[in-house]
Length: 400
Image 1 (cartoon, rainbow, N blue to C red):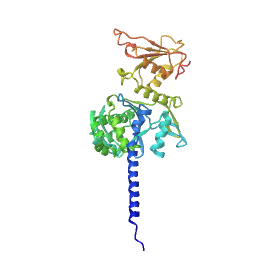
Image 2 (tube, rainbow, N blue to C red):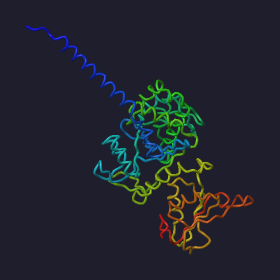
Image 3 (cartoon, rainbow, N blue to C red):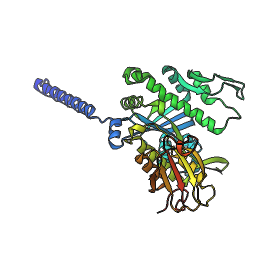
Image 4 (cartoon, helix red, strand yellow):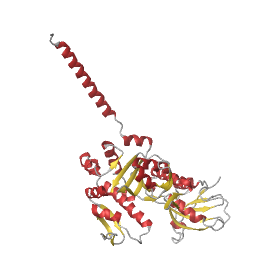
């Protein structure tokens, strides 16, 4: 029986060694060339769009799309109400958007919201209410303004107590704030309450910016959130958004008409869903506006009906509120036979006037500044723009 050939063994060992070295080099190159998902997103889209979902026991409490422009640290939150209705392909029927989450999960939910708003939303963060309480404690509490004290009981006799004023709520209290119910509470107040929690969350991120930027500290926070990003990219995302100017982060809600479908009251966005798409486009564009002097400003409008169409100014108010404008007043113009719609620019800001005009397809914009001596009780002295609706306005657009 022949013995093994030493030279053959050495050759085999050398081949294995070379193979291992090649594998190590390939892995090293792959890691070094790995594209950072967040930075790559910013190359193609100057804003970061993230879906933020708060859920409890697989039930959606609230959903917002967070749009953030890192250059100016400006951000916007657009609320997607849980009863928003549409024909959802993932369900094959007309239903509420939260049914998609319940039946199909977060990926289908994100996809349907992308279809709804007409834009890609690359990232998502899911906050589970139970873990959110723990996250709240880790971030040092959530600062919330509570207009009046809460002292009520649920059907099981559990008592809910919350103080009034600007208070810092711990994990247990933040869950109470989100869950307590009052029979006399308007739906709008409930929506606002839940929005306040998301505002407090981003404020807490800003307050803990240094903790979040530290990978070791962040690893504990990361366990309390769910995302479609891996650890490195998720840390990068949270590090970037923790710089948001949270003091001026104001939420918006999409409006629509309510209809009962199969016993459920659904909210259908106006104009066959086109309005919500335009609102998202306008918000994204406004964030990257070069008008730094007017960052974080809400523009105030006065709407006058210059036609014989009843309720035109009031309906237009709802339309423009959806786009984030503040409407001081609506009423009739000095005449009801205006042929063309006109936007009167009282503040001399041509860029914002054009943005407003683009939203309703109005190019008839005139400058009419208000003097400092003007009576502050007059509407023109307190508004940035006056819109006089003419016969060319069909309730959504100015017809050419």
